[in-house]
Length: 124
Image (cartoon, rainbow, N blue to C red; front, side, top):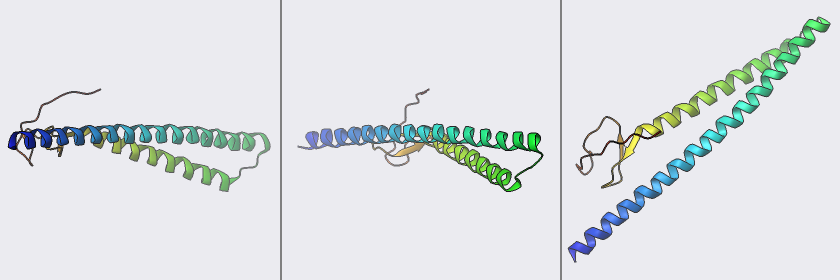
């Protein structure tokens, strides 16, 4: 009976790892979509800022409030994009132990939970 329990336990761990991997891929996809959306909005902000300065050069009137608001919006989007990119980099730097499903940092050779020697793979 122990043999079948061990097989079931390993199958559960493998299933849990597969589920976690699928969830990680989905989360990364959502984050990349969010970055693309923010970059599109950023482009519109740059365009609006250009129009404000165009009107300033043409009419001699500068809307300082609009300029300040656009610059703040641009800076916020750039910061949010960088935060999301950092989250993606951190998520990619973690591996999962195939034996117990624990999240493992890249520089670890043995799983700190179960002691399993970890395999190194490169993903692009």
